[in-house]
Length: 193
Image (cartoon, rainbow, N blue to C red; front, side, top):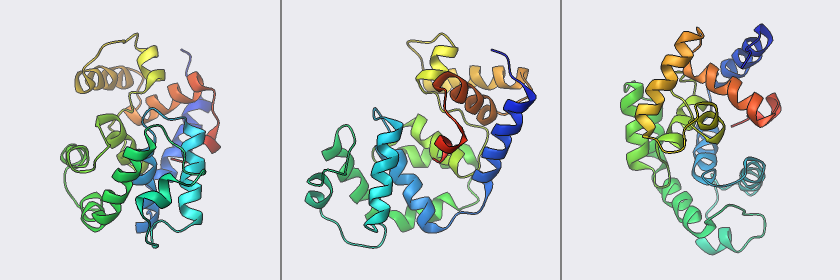
């Protein structure tokens, strides 16, 4: 794959936006996105998060039925993900304090994976990337296809990916973003979360 200076310029502009200080509410909706995204379509999840924002999920009380019975709440395994969202909302002050803490990034990602239901290594990496961390890879289908991987251990494959990124003089987040944009044929606007 050919990486151009324009590719690097675009991904740096996007990643610099992720480094901007986010409000507590912005971080909350980033966590919502990461809970909803596994095995769901990116655009569908974006619409669902916009629906959550419109009805102020962050500040208003919601029941499980209010989430799952509304036609605008779309995600695969929506019952389970709705439960995860409500659990996360209940524990969000603790989650937020960890996310803004000075904890080492690797420890922070492991804490997120172990303590936010519905988040694994990939979505924990995604969340931290959205908060400005650049040393993690989001090993989605596009990256795995690029690496010719079908069966893999996440952390081992991430180490391989870090070496590939370093060989290109890129951070894992830069390399991951460029591959994702090229393979998925998406533009900067679709890189919101």
